[in-house]
Image 1 (cartoon, rainbow, N blue to C red):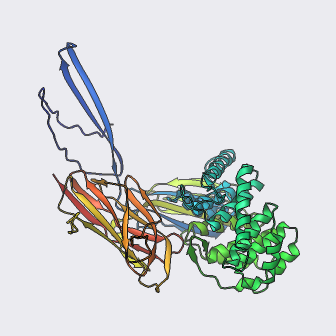
Image 2 (spheres, rainbow, N blue to C red):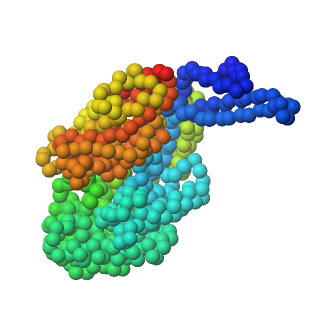
Image 3 (cartoon, one colour):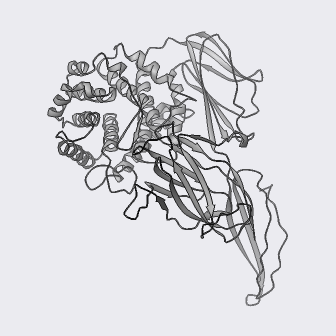
Length: 575
C-alpha cells in the first residue's frame, strides 16, 4: 500500500547465506503484511529469475475488547443528550445508535453478546440459537427483513447440525464437542430449544429426536426410584417429553404431589408439562401463590445450571403460554429487567433466557406511539426517523456532541452501544472470590525474568488457581482461564499437565475439564476449590523484540461472583 515501508536491499553471494534482523515498531492493530522479493542471474537460462514470498504478522492489543451499552427510554418531546464512556483507547471505538418505538431494540446488546461469545459448549451453543430463534428481527438491523430471516434460518440450521454432532452413543449430548459422556441437564436444555425450533418450522431429523427421547426417558426411568436426582431436573425432563408426545404421566402426577419441593423453575416446567397435556387448570394449580416469592440462588454446576434471572424468565415464558393476563407477569418483567447491566445479563444462560421471555412478552403488548425525530451531531442533523421502523446510525469518535430530539406521543427506545479497546490504565488487577497467579519458570524450576529472554528459550508456564473463601468439599465449576500470549512467543507442545493435592487421577494429578491452544492464547476450563491447583504448559521464545504481556484472566461462566485478573507486564527478548 501507500504506507508500506521499504527496507534496503541485501546482497547474498553465490553459495553463501546471510541473516538480517529488521527492527519494526507496532503503530496500530491488525495484520501486517511482509513481502520478500529476490532476484538472481541464472547462468543456465541466461536471464534474471525472480522469486517472491509473503507472510502475515498479527499486531494484537494488550487490553481486551470491551463493549458498553446505554439503554434510554424517553417520552416524545423530551430531548436527550448521549455521552460515550471515556474508558476506551482513542481510535479503537465504533458506536451504533438504534432508535425505535418498540422496546425490542433494548434486547440487541444481549443478542450481540451471545453471538460474540468466544466459547462453544452445549449450553452456550443452545443459548445462542435460542436468542436467534426468538429475536431474528434484531440481527443486522440495517439489513432487510428477508435478509435477516434468511440469516436466522441458516444459523439455526447450522446450529442444529452442531448439536447433533455432540450426540453420544447413548443418545444424550456431550457438554463439549468430542466428549463421550452425555450431560443430562444440557441435553434437556438443548432438547427444549429443538422443540421450540420445530414448532417455528425448522427441520430436525427424526432420528436425532428419537435418540434424544429414548435417552431422556431412560434417564428418568433409571433414576426413577427414590435415589438422588433433583426433582427440578425431573420436572424439566417431564416438560420436554410431554412436548414430544412421550409424557411420563406417572412422574408428572408424582411431582405434582410434592410441588412444595420444587423451585420456581421446577414448578414452571411441571406447569408446562401439564399445559402440553391440555390441562392448563392443573398447570395453574402447580403454581401456588408462594411460587413468585420462592428464594433462588445461582447454581453453576454443569449438571444443573440456574439463576434468579433464569428462573424468573422460565416462569414468565410459561405464564405467557397458559395465562397472558396473569398478575405475576408485570412483576416478573420488572425483576428480569432490573438485573440487566450495560444492556445485557451476567451469563449466556441468563441472556438467552431473558431475551426469549422478554421478546415474547413485548410482542403481546400494545404500543400507542406516533412520533418523528432526528439525531443531531454537533447541531447538524444526521438522521431523521419515526416510530414505524427501527432507525440505526453508525458514529465515529468525532461525532460529538450527540443529541436526539423527538416530537409526538409515546416512548422512544434508544440503544447506544460502543465497542473498543479499554485504556491500559483501566486494567486494574482484582480478585473476586478467586485467587489467580501466573509464574514463568525454567525447566529446572528456577524463576525466569521476562525482561531477559532469548530466542529459543523454553518457558514453563504455571497457572495457580484457588477459591480460598470456599469450605472444604465445596467447588466452583465452569471457570474459564484465558492466558493471552505476548508477541514473540508460541505454544511449544499442546499438552497440559496439572498438579494438585486432591481431586485428581490415580497419580494425584488434577486435570482441566477442557484445554484450547489457539494462536494467540491458551484457554482452559476447570473448577476451583479452596486448595491451590496448578496448571502447566510450555512456551517457546521465537522473536527478538519488546512485547506487552497481557493480564491473566479467570471467571466463572455462570456466576459473576467468581472472577480474577492479574497484572499486565512486558517481555524483552534478545538474540
